[in-house]
Length: 113
Image (cartoon, rainbow, N blue to C red):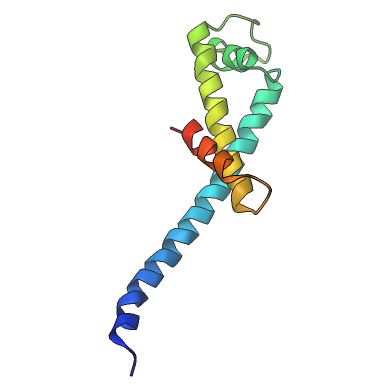
């Protein structure tokens, strides 16, 4: 016969397992998105301005947008997106046990807000 506190923890244990599984899936999905973002970012010249020119000014799908045509606000949007994607990547790296300090993890979370 098991102790009653053990019975109370079984549902919590199952829920924690489900949450952990969902977190791992989300981190993997986030890393895939980060890799796709970086691919497009590099295609756009590896700069916030280039990415903004590509995304905001190239409405016809032309491969060579006019450089420098995105507004400062549009470039800032790309900078925020890049910081967010970097935060997602940093969390993925931390979850895989690589050298990231706890303060870096909190910085990564702050960038995503």
